[in-house]
Structures are given as structure tokens and as C-alpha cells.
Length: 123
Image 1: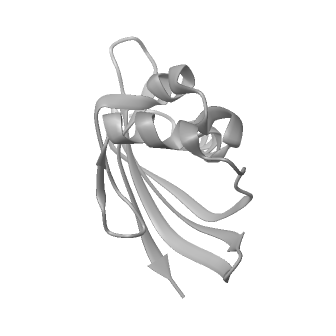
Image 2: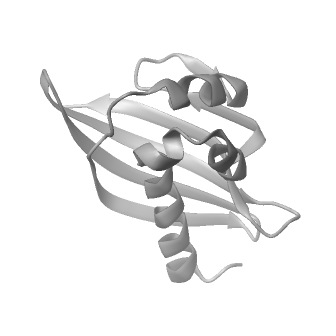
């Protein structure tokens, strides 16, 4: 199994990258972070494929300032990791909070890529 503390730091860095405006608007960078079979269930409950994300995220206009808390990593196998955490961002309607889960897979090229992500709104 990978060393959990080092892996947790790496996956937190990758998760934060996916929240950054710079990465979210760069299709090439998104392709390096999202697995070909990536799926997401968004805060709205809508399901997204990798192609949906690659088409939609680069169109975002404003950067997001997201606070991440309670980041935890669980190694499910030597090549699969589950991360859970909470986020909070300010919107024009006040704070938007969510509980998030992602599954990351270590690919044959030695890079970790996100396979699944879900965001669930919380109070």
C-alpha cells in the first residue's frame, strides 16, 4: 500500500488543482487529472462524464475561492484511493457547503487520476 500521509498530501494537491481556475480552464491539464472513464455526481445531483467536464469547465468565467477541511485519505488498494473532505465557497446567496468524495487511481504511466467524484450539499 502507498504511504498514506504522503499520498494524502499528493491527492490534496491534485484536488486543489482541480478547484483552481487555471486548471479548470485548461483542457490539457484537466486531461492529465481525469481518467478516461471519469464520472461525477455534482452538487445538483446531475451526472457528468469526462467529456461533459472537458466541455463545461473551460467555459467558467470566475475563479472559485474554496476552503477545504477535514481531508481524509483511505487506501483501498495499492492503486486505488478514496478521499473525503468538506468544502465551503462564498456565492451571491451566501456560503455553499458540500461533503465531497473522490476515487483516485494510479495509472500505468505512474500518475494518479480521478475516476469518480461526488459533491453533496450540506448545511
